[in-house]
Image 1 (cartoon, helix red, strand yellow):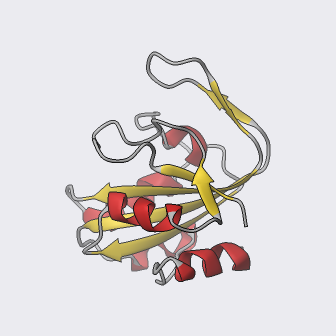
Image 2: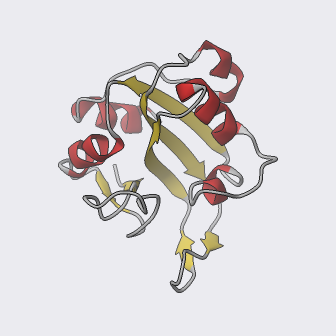
Length: 147
């Protein structure tokens, strides 16, 4: 995890990390966030009108936005829950992740976060078309940390 956090900091994303038991300390402001998810076993799932995708174990990095009611605290509280209806692509990962850490970022955009991370050789596209159905700029919002 230390190398992953250093990789984020090297990309200009240095902020406090929150675990599930700290979610109430997260701001209810609007912004974007990064989810760091440790996948302990291969995870397979489908995306709209595509062949099933399989992800190998390792650290995944997802960038999302929290601009709706309740802001970042509400969105991240949902991501930390295991008992939820699967709505977004990332729900399939947060439901099975062995560890999740959230990095809320005020006044940021998920596209800007992805762009900065992809400038580093430590982050690569994990799945094209993942989590970016409402985005016309990015090829994905899910990266793999390749340290």
